[in-house]
Length: 191
Image (cartoon, rainbow, N blue to C red; front, side):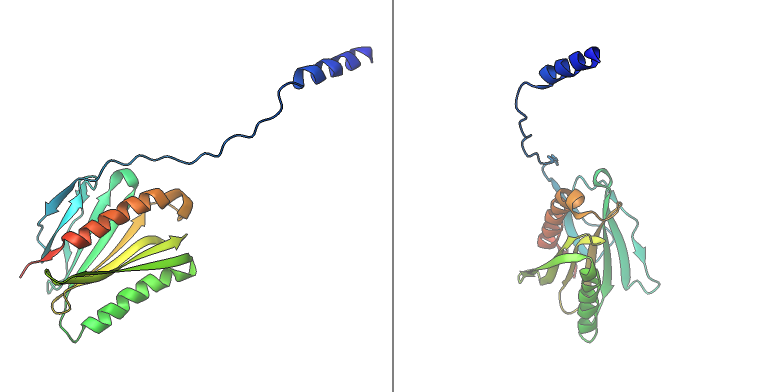
């Protein structure tokens, strides 16, 4: 019994000492490389600039009548892809495509905490569109559409190859969303 008492006293003295100090708050720090853009002039009815971090441009898939084309801009290091779909339109189908693009974004509303709209307009190059930033655990964090309102309609969506966890992918989502904004700003239709 005496040995237990001695051991207890020793543990008490050893454990007593400095008062506990709370650890400072820490934030995850991710360093992404500064974006360097290069112009892409693929077999598409438009040109644009992409970040050199996006190493791969996926296969251009075309419909039989060549009016619909699909393209993937892949970010291997971020495990992300921007999926693009181009459609040749006329003025009678524009409204239907606008509604479809908006409905696709609204489908994420169930998991989203907010959807922020950013309109885009480049009068000189006839490029008009909308960028949607989806906050929360939605499947896609950024979606957009671009049109000239006469012949061209382009939609895009950013997806990560991970379970949607907004807090974890937020830094990468913000980084790629800046690339999407640059994409929209540099897009030019081929006549």
